[in-house]
Image (cartoon, rainbow, N blue to C red; front, side, top):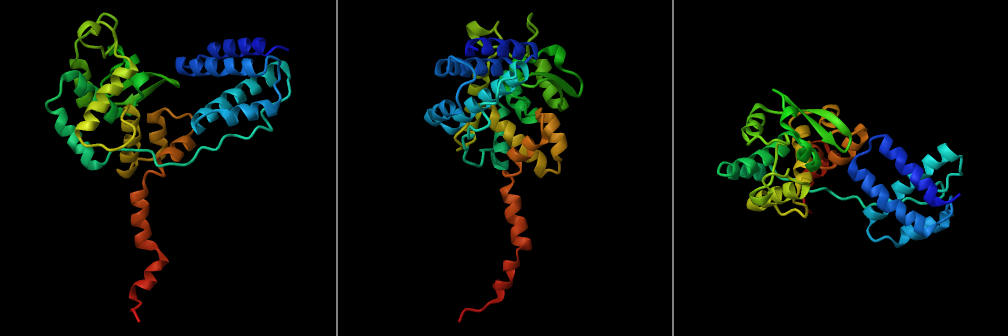
Length: 283
């Protein structure tokens, strides 16, 4: 069996299942490499292992791994081929604390927005208030805005996200366009909806204004920050998982529980048995 034929069937199935454009784009890119490294299907595990070892960046290697595993599972169910990914080692991704904004930076952000243009103010408030993704913001239409919620469409299909009255009023104050989309560009691009890169530039501009020193400046930073503030203010993981659109609550826990390190430190200082040493006098 030729790998090209398997991939064509796999991609057709992905489109029928309604996977997001971004996922389809990644699958298309990765599966083309699979065809190159192994024209005949199923590929030998050692070939896959050697290829993954040569991919630069742990996240990139893991992305290839997950695509190849998806192809493997599909081919096994559809064509009854042996699972070639069973003996392939998954690339190790080093753990790291993902960047978020602080309470001070959040307050400074609110101060800067006082004199911001309506579109920029609406963009920042939307991300801080709802934690939606940039692609979901790009797809947002005026008909998707309700009194206390919005309908967002993106990576995981569509979902309902709560929204505050202040943010809703800002969104509805933006000029209406014939295409129905909420956010548009400026100048010669005013008739085109705002793309993900446009949202990134707006968020980056205001994060720099408040002195944010993290390595990532896009809407994803505000999304993660939403998760931290939600949990610190008494929100629960189940509600947070629904708001963020995670298909598995474990994903929510893995992303946001490690970020609450300040709370963990405080609890440690309060409950550590090491407090017994505080009364030891120096000899």
